Length: 207
Ligand SMILES: Nc1ncnc2c1ncn2[C@@H]1O[C@H](COP(=O)(O)OP(=O)(O)OP(=O)(O)O)[C@@H](O)[C@H]1O
Ligand SMILES: O=C(O)c1ccc[n+]([C@@H]2O[C@H](COP(=O)([O-])O)[C@@H](O)[C@H]2O)c1
Image (tube, helix red, strand yellow):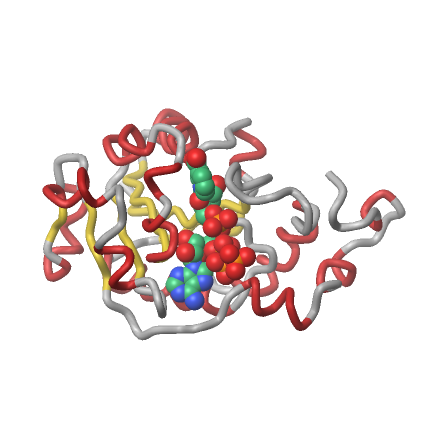
């Protein structure tokens, strides 16, 4: 059984904090690998400004550069758009692996808006990585009204494959303030460097 952390994201663009939280998760949770799932389209984010998947994948591969991080477009391959469906499909496709779903604290704040979020929590354990400005908000997140009773002690985080589900653990890791929003603000055309064909050169705000 390999122990795999799943980090889903827009990666628009990928940056060093993604790598940082992946390596911290690997250390704290005893993971063999972290798989980055570069999402075709976050259902809650606008399509406008979302760079083409091909560019986001290329950039993610460049940023990850670590033998224990695998950059994938698995949601594209599986045909899933919602994380609950992705989690169920991963378990079906890879019964030989143990998976844990990783997210930054900002994502927990809006987790109650995700489709079938309780089903997701019943399918995979969840590890929430500390993120500046969101730590308190994550603990008070609307979804915590239900998830609170399933919180595990972070000292026991390595035991996650044995937890009964739902299970959620908060990991206090060294903070990193970087965000894709900040990168887009200073380099809105970042994706152009990763696109080659005329088709790929279409304006970034068109689907
Ligand atoms: N600095 C960070 N600290 C902790 N978690 C992070 C950080 N940056 C991103 N993450 C987490 O990584 C995952 C993928 O993030 P995403 O691709 O949306 O990057 P982002 O920087 O949050 O993007 P944006 O600013 O466009 O919302 C999410 O679970 C997010 O919470
Ligand atoms: O399943 C949902 O309803 C859902 C709603 C919002 C976000 N997500 C997932 O959350 C992950 C983080 O997204 P993002 O855009 O914050 O990087 C990514 O895998 C998205 O597909 C999933």
